[in-house]
Image (cartoon, rainbow, N blue to C red; front, side, top):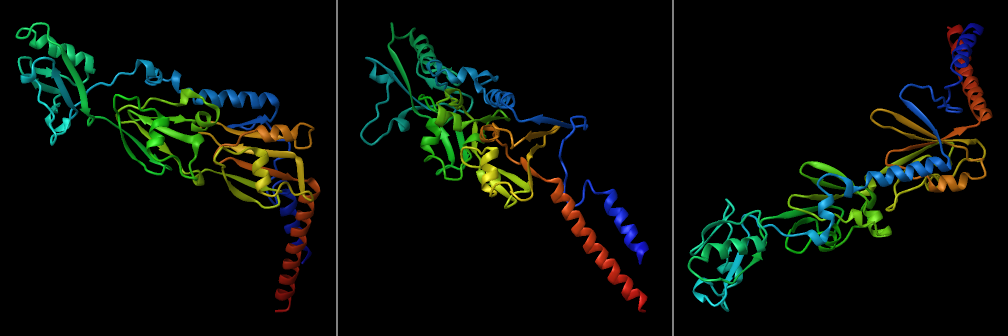
Length: 358
């Protein structure tokens, strides 16, 4: 009987740093693939810079030109309908009567991007602006009409669409017209966000490349760099924040997963959602945020006993799928170990009695 108790005790004592539960006090920065970072004012400054740079859409290829609305010009595409007026020459202008809309009597841009106009012949309109098409038509008929006065308008915008999906009231396509379609315009046409919209993690996909857009910065702080001008084929997706969670574990009152708030969540807020640290068992000087990345995992360490801990924790922004872990005190871990040893020795002792009586 003593032999069994001795062997079980040795097994528990040799693993006392891991049993029961995880032990993360005084993490080492020498662990391969893991970077340990203390949460300080400098850490918060770097975090803010990294967050801002992640959303600098105006500096990304393909976006800068579209943020300058004063330079925007609509370019005609296949299936658009054009209205062409030649002043003082009604024979070249098909009037839109009471029962005929401008779309019905206009010039449809063919699939190959061309239209046909008397005396000008076949004109390639796709990819051109309205003033460019006007000049082309005027040049084409100038051999028949001296100094022709031509006006060209797009009366039906059919060629280009951007799409808004996810957590908006009316997801679907939005026509791209001669009026600039910015993100705020598209959201307005979509009936605004649903209560579950995750504004901080919207994604704009253009030409197969996905880019994060911080709509929280746009709507709350007026960061107009996020108000991107949409173009044909763009897909703006507003994710559901209920899929964006952080996990609070260890010595807290209620270990749980916490859904990120509409405007994000800080370390202090996540701990508050879990009821705070357990005053009887927690080691507040060892609060960790574990963040997994593709190449390097990061472990952020907050000493909650420091005077500035409340400020640091309230400004440290968590990311989806972060794990917040609060360490237990040495006494708590030792007490739990003793309890397990006692329980195990009782089982072994009872097992010995049963086998000895047979």
